[in-house]
Each structure stands twice: as structure tokens, then as C-alpha cells.
Image (cartoon, rainbow, N blue to C red):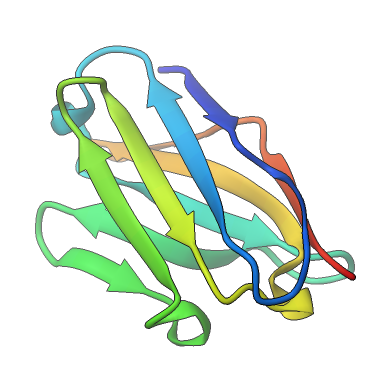
Length: 114
């Protein structure tokens, strides 16, 4: 399984950015797919995921600002981020779980700064 994340960059506070993760193979086969992030000096944390058993899950810190979506035709999962804050600055990782194995993409840096 390969996960290729893209779309990171520098954005001003209050701005928007969309991340995309392209998965190898059929994306609908994954038990869970979504996004985590890791800020400097902090542990990696869940941002948003889509799971077969619990559906869509968001971190409290991003609810109402971020939207995760899956495009089965393109085998991609996207993260639309709006009203970005400096605290959203992190490396964002695409994540997928297939059966009991976790897979990670290479990460894409999002910097929110004026």
C-alpha cells in the first residue's frame, strides 16, 4: 500500500487549503483512511478519518473548520481546511488501515503564518 499526500504549503491565518491523498489500489477496501498531523515538539494526533465502523471522525480542534471526503472513483481522500490557525501548523500524514496493518504516507507540511 502506498499513500501519496500533496497540497501542503504556506497559508495566512484565516485562509484555506486542501490536502489530497492518493492511495494505491482501491480506496474503498481500507477499514479506515484519513489524516493525522504532528506539530513540532508534539505527538502525532488524529485530524479526521473515515471508518467503516464509525463513519467520519474529527478531532475536536478541527470540527466545523475541516471537512474530510473520499473519492472512490479517483482513489483519493481529501481534507478541506478552512479558517486555519497558527496552531494548525504541522506535518500532515495520510493514514490508512487495512485489516490490522497501519500504513502512512510521507507527510506534507502545512504552515499557517502571516
